[in-house]
Image (tube, rainbow, N blue to C red; front, side):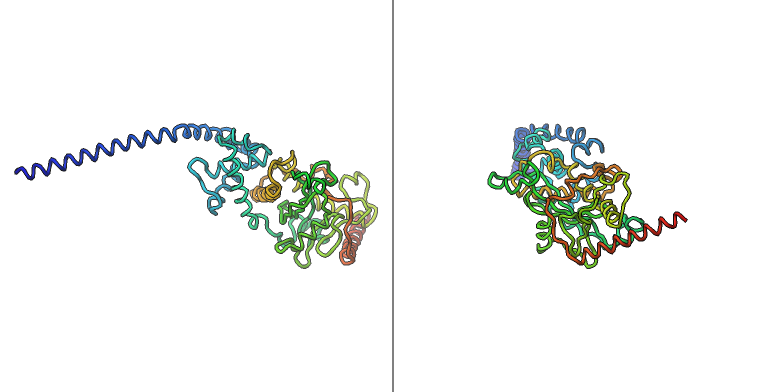
Length: 394
């Protein structure tokens, strides 16, 4: 082998050795940088995963207690955000963790610093992800808060108490008060019948206890009829299909699409006791009340699940408080769609709350068309009932 070839081989070997040495040195430096930057966080991640697996979604019971829903609907909810690209996993905060922190906050009305301690995050990070999840849930509004079906509800169809009298009824509407935190100059308008400041939330609920329309944000002193008028006048507001109607209380008045009970006649279920109905108006009110109680049960489930709505004064800015109400209704519908909801009290165990039935002491105007329609229904109910009783006596 001549000297020229030998030199070329030596040069190649030397180059390879230098390259390997450089690669090893850079690899060691990179590992050192990674251990300095990510070592402590990896330990935090391990502790966080243990907390989530043992204290949050260990089983349905712990998941329900912590996040207000069972494991299966929770993980499907998170997957929905992932599939729709509404939330993104980050290097240390998965979508599941983001949603868990949000649900824990609204479910128990706890501060960011408490959530941060539980989930190994700073208050600023908790706040940031709370806003992201709140926005993502809001994007599901049109999908999960849907218009009611135009078919005769299964609850009504074939039931002698309501069919055929209420066959065109598509749900019930009511208002409820949700605790609100506002600036001093606004407190007077947000303090209505209650001692605390509240927002008046109007919602429509179908007979499967799903929210089909929600209008949040009105001050606590607002009259029910005023809130309803606003809902009807909004560009994308409440719409009642031709020939259909909602059951409402006296605060909304009788008008096309809205059917209240007779005034100055026994109405609430706990007013009846063992005293039988005396005439067609009482019979109508009794059956109207027994059907409309669903909206109260819907509100009861909502506030039972999300303590941020009823437990104590919220700690968010008012526009965020309004968005939270709507988000809670969306989550409620998601759980209802899953078929199991431990926060809904069975109808036979429900105790009516009279303060739910009217959010103001005033009465709205009643129009002749619906008052005549109501009287016709009542007359037909009474006649059918009398005929049935006569047949039983024969």
